[in-house]
Image (cartoon, rainbow, N blue to C red):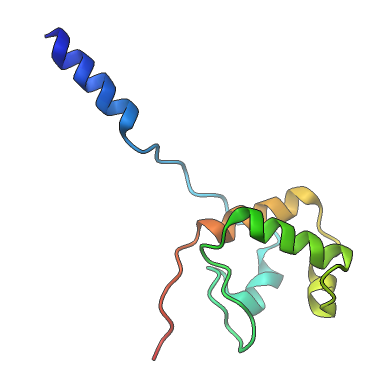
Length: 103
């Protein structure tokens, strides 16, 4: 019985932790116009954001916001956002699953 209990505990500790998906950000609408609500671009030239690494997205958004990446439309879109709002967008887009483009 002790072996079964130990095995059950070990198995439970090895199982992946299923985290709740992030809440949809309140500021998603402006991003979704170009990048899609689920991070799959809706217009030519806009990158897909679904499944991107959080550190990459966070740094890119900060660079757009402070002008180190000089893309006026992105600066206008993220300029007024707080760090907390940027983090919500990062969590949302990085948690999305990329999908294949339609043929």
